[in-house]
Image 1 (cartoon, helix red, strand yellow):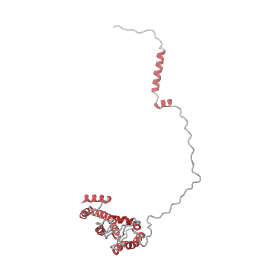
Image 2 (spheres, one colour):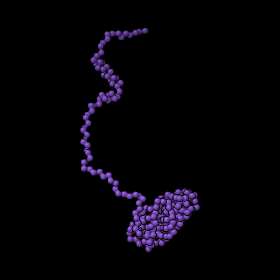
Image 3 (cartoon, helix red, strand yellow):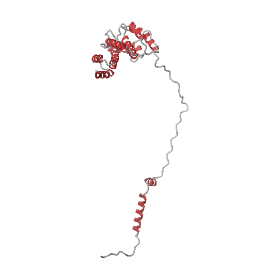
Image 4 (cartoon, rainbow, N blue to C red):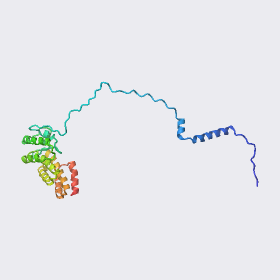
Length: 257
C-alpha cells in the first residue's frame, strides 16, 4: 500500500489571506451582537427639538357669568284664560297624550282641524267657545292636583258634559287612570264607549284619540287573553289610516289571535 507525504516547508499567510480572515472574524462578531446594540451604533445623534410656542393666556378683561337663566319647573302649567283657544289647551300637556277636541257632529274635516289648532281661519263649530270655557276650570284643577291617579273630577266633568268636544279625550284619560289602579273591566268598558264614538270620525281629533284608545284596548285584550275582543279590534283597525306605532301592535295582535 502506497503512502503519500505532504510534508514540506510552511509558508506564512499572504496579505490577502490575512485581510480576508479579519473581515470574516469581524462579521462573525457583529452577527453575535443584539439587534438593539447594532441599532444604537448606527443611529444618528438626536437633534434638538424646536422651542414650543408661547402659551396664550386668558384675556384679563373676560367676565364669567355664572348666573342661571330664568326657568320654571316642568310641572308648572300656565293659567288659562276664561275662554281659552284650542291651541292653548293643546299646549298644556297634562296627560300622557295631548288633549284633542273631537268633532262628534261629523262636520269637521282633517284640514279644518289643522287650521283650528294652528290658529288659522277654518270654521269652528258653534259649541267651541262654551266647550273651552267649561273645560278650563277642570284642567286648572288637574294641573294643581298632587294626585296623578285621581278620577273624581274627570268623572264629574264627563257626566255633566257628555257632548263636549273634549269629553272623548277626557274619558280616555279617565280609563287610563282606572286601568292603572286595577279597575280593568271598568276601564275597558270606558275605552269601548270612546272607541264607538270616534272610530268612524275623519277629523284630526277623532283619528288621534281613536289611535290612542285602540292601542290601549289591544294591549288590554292581549294582557287578559281576550282573543274574541282582540279579533274584533283587529278587523275594525283595518279600516283606519296607517299608524307606525299602532301597526306594530296590530301585528302582535294578529299573531296572538
